[in-house]
Length: 339
Image 1 (cartoon, rainbow, N blue to C red):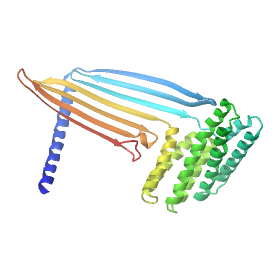
Image 2: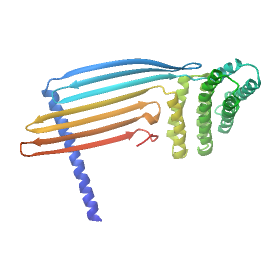
Image 3: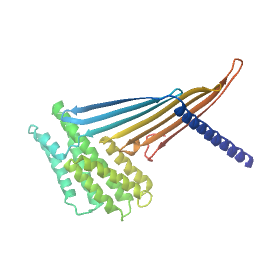
């Protein structure tokens, strides 16, 4: 057992030494190449704008920028690309949903939808009237009423009734579904706080959740995004201390979803270095790439680094070569799509 452990440690040490030597040689070679050979630089820039419109108007607007810089000398080529993506997603309110219901013809369906919206509005008014910081139990109960009235008392009624035209039904569902989903997830988060957070931190969570609900009532997109980001930070702050780790991660996963649905922006950067040269009969070849994606939600914050390099010797009667490759991929956040 001791011999096997020693052999394993020796093998690991050799791998680390080889990696260090390869990276050092590549660094020296890159430095000499930059200083000894002529250089050329090219750059390209792009800008695009688009928007998506549904049956009730513009739903999303997107602005994208793309900048690419290429640098080349005799043995090496360097490319760096940065892509920025900023989009605006509509936040609809209960009052706008009510305005569209008012335009329907009188009948049993319209009366039922109006009753559901009145119940949901009353629950939201109760949230507004809560004393600061409020009770997490009361907040969860009111959010449950809102979610239920929008789901079973509104969306399901429209889908099951069938008396509305496709345009009328589509307009109401396009408005109601995102609103219902947001209140549904906030209710879920409130339930996790009630069940798994210590009493001393529950008022802080309750106050922030209430503020987020108030921003949804007003349709304040910027403040809504800020509130969700603060909720992410708060869940991380108390994770494993005042709230169970697995439950804190579940809270953050819901916040992550809500942020991605109304994503404020994302940036992608990539660096690519290629080199091929022959020095004293030795052929050098190397490839270094690095990527980084940064966005509002944790699931899109990740980086990737890879290195491949090789050296070869060729003569009429024999040839030899050796190569080395290394890649690592990391996620800044525990909430990750894959490994």
